Length: 367
Image 1 (tube, rainbow, N blue to C red):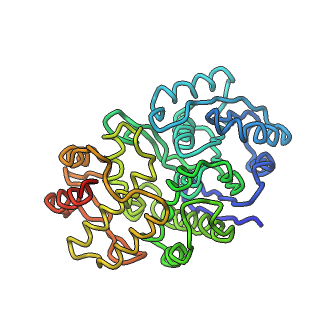
Image 2 (tube, rainbow, N blue to C red; image 1 turned 30 degrees about the vertical axis):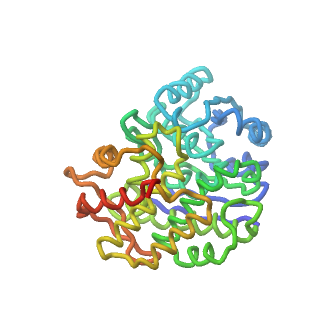
């Protein structure tokens, strides 16, 4: 069964198609978009080994000429050096303005391919084919592209929407357990910020920490409801003028922790989980959210096998300093997304620094 979600935008609307075994029909799916015949498939060696040949075969069967560019896996390679490699492949294969970059991989590959497509020849087509849970439910949708700067995450980037997103749940079967858990952090996020029904279904599931223990129907629900939530928010606010900021729930502290640990110690979803615990507790301290609801959130995070405490040895003062480098800082004030009830959050820059410090101290591993 194919589920199709529409992302309605003033400049360029597009569809997200969710269907098992759809990777073998990638070429057919994008033929209807009337793109040029040259395609650059960007992936990493691990993903390419699993799915590269299938994607190429499907594209070639539909009449596309396919070149490839493989980049090393991992957040620490999400930088301008990797973008240069994509550009080099684009030159070598003489990509034109009608050409398309296809991102086959997780969030890192999707973000970098999107940014390369946004900036090559001032913008060429990009199609997202996410292969991790995190990329399926979050980063492949909405047009945020970019790379990290040594001083902070995603500081270099552009809003650039894909022409199409193809999600094949079957590819999750080769996803390492740790990557699946990292993706569940973003799923839980949607439950807290937007979708009480999704939150309830996650609570009702006995397991959230491994794909093999979760009912296929729930996986379908997770993918469709998460993508729908993001599509709803992005359709209302494409470039984060207001509402879209709620998608950063858990990311303020999360990004700071990621950059301070050199993008090596924690996966993005693990850092977001820690950030959601912090934001939830800040909301409790400020009287915005009930202790009961924060405990419900934290129970889901733990059920997904995700961390709820800061890594050993991380300096609280360094986290607070790193928060000032966040993209969402306005007039020197850090903006936090804080929950007020399950399914509802608010954005505020009125969080006293002493509350942030108190909450972070309470999350230290030795407490």
